[in-house]
Length: 143
Image (cartoon, rainbow, N blue to C red; front, side, top):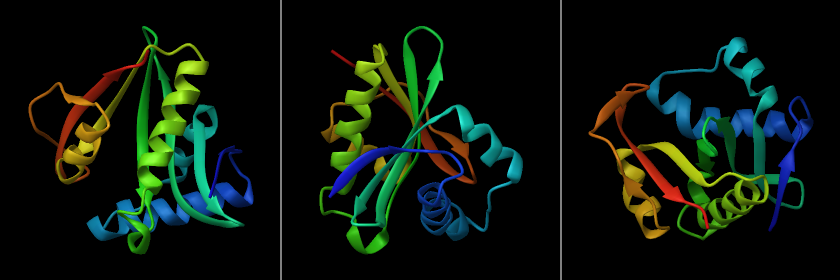
């Protein structure tokens, strides 16, 4: 498996949109707007690949105060539980650390809280609704 930063607008980015749509949006009856996708030009886009096929992805958004926010974490349904998400998270944390971020935050789906807790993240909010489902803010200090 290869982990790498991908370019907005590239064929790999188009795979990323399809994977996120399949895993994160379509099951909720939602889709991406062009405006949402255009805003991703400034984000750090990360993919996990086996040869040319994307297995999983996530992105990092720069926030104030030395913080990066993880967004749009997705792993192909038939590959979940095989370490791809964990590898993506470790890679994303290393990229954030290398770029000077001291903290990583996210809006985690309630169903994924346990996954992130096993990686050292802590819940820092009350439950809230986002994209029609329950979420929590989670964060981790990067050392």
